[in-house]
Every structure is written in C-alpha cells, then in structure tokens.
Length: 165
Image 1: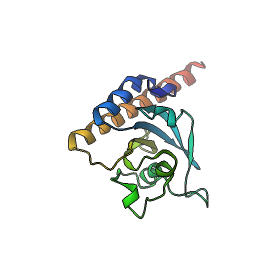
Image 2: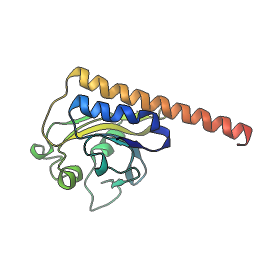
Image 3: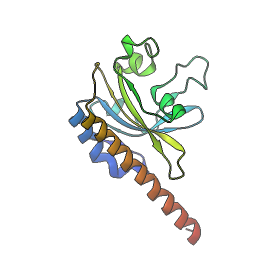
C-alpha cells in the first residue's frame, strides 16, 4: 500500500493504482532540498525501496555523487525521460540503476503555488520502455493533483498563522 508524508496522503490510493496501470515499479513524489532529493510519497511494487523521508544525494552538492534524474528535472524545470540508463552514457551507473535496478525514468516538475519548483512526480521501472501520450497524461494528472495539495497546505498554513493556531 502506498505511503506518503502528510501533505500527500490523499494521493495514496492513486499511487498504487497508477503504478499498476502503467506497469511500473515505482511512482514517487519527491521534494528537492539544497543537497538532496527526498521521498514524500511512494507507491508501486518497489514502494519499500523508497521509504518516506529517504534522501538521494544531489550530484551538484557532493563531489562523489552522480546527478539524479529528479535533480535534473528540478534544475531545468522540465520533464525528463530516460528510456534505458544502461544504454545512455549520460545516465549509465546512476544511483537508481546501481542500487535498485531501476533504469527507466519519466518525471515532471512539481511546483509550489508561487511557481517555484518543489520537486518531482516520477515513475521508475526495471526495464527499458516507452510511455504513450495517455500514460504521460496520467502522470501529469497526478502532478496536477499534488500541486493542488501543495496549494491546500499553503492556504491552511496561512489560515493557521492568521488565527494563531
């Protein structure tokens, strides 16, 4: 069963359903910090691989770390598709491939209400594959739902600040 941090709990049923519908190992919501990418929600067969709060070191922050897929999405504020990292010199040997056997990636930037990049919504798989337009749209819809939840959280925090709660 999918797991998530508090802001993304409403997405839990969707994470596993999307993983099953797409036939992928992992569906994730990731938060970008200055030095890491942190798991905020995880679903799919490899959900336990990506525990809530687990962090991957960003290549830009650590000399001995390779750039992460999600790091690229955040830094460029643009989607990223890697069909097969083992066949791509730029991504061969990356952390997800080496540690977890996941060599296929599709991710989209996830934005805060102010438009800044919060992190990513992404899928990973253990075999090379492509994604149809409908499959990409399904992941984009999940991203849109996650962005709406970030907006709800901001509104709740602003209301709590006004009332002193």
